[in-house]
Image (tube, rainbow, N blue to C red; front, top):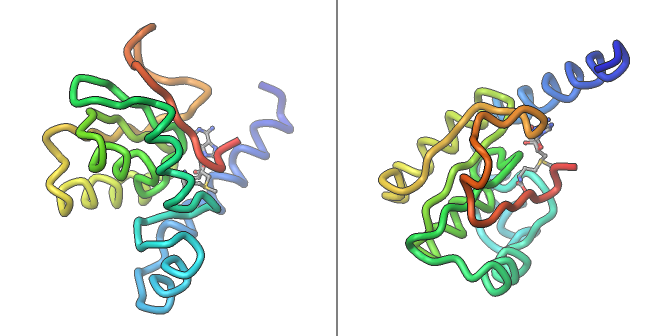
Length: 140
Ligand SMILES: C[S@@+](CC[C@H](N)C(=O)[O-])C[C@H]1O[C@@H](n2cnc3c(N)ncnc32)[C@H](O)[C@@H]1O
């Protein structure tokens, strides 16, 4: 990795860490509801209708393992697991995002099949063929 890429990566991490450290509020929830279609912990532009399209094409089942890269607070990985019954691992780099994703999994009673990992998409700590499906929304 070049010095420029390292600097850029640090800036991105700080920006998203600041974003995910913001306290929840009814105003933010109202914006998310209006823009995304529900309050699901989103931090991008992927709507509930688009996540439902992912459900259609991925054919997720309870035995399926899904990886969500750059999931932030767990969107859409947790939702896809909730709707399909699949197992999921949601990953991201900022710690506050992953802490919130974990507590959302607990609140949604998904913790027995959804797991979180603090990991960059460029250095995933998983073996080959660990997953049946991979999603990323607004991560690139
Ligand atoms: C616009 S947000 C989208 C978050 C979530 N997927 C959503 O749709 O609400 C982009 C996400 O990409 C993550 N990200 C940035 N660089 C990453 C990397 N190298 N590996 C994994 N995630 C990364 C950010 O931390 C951020 O959570």
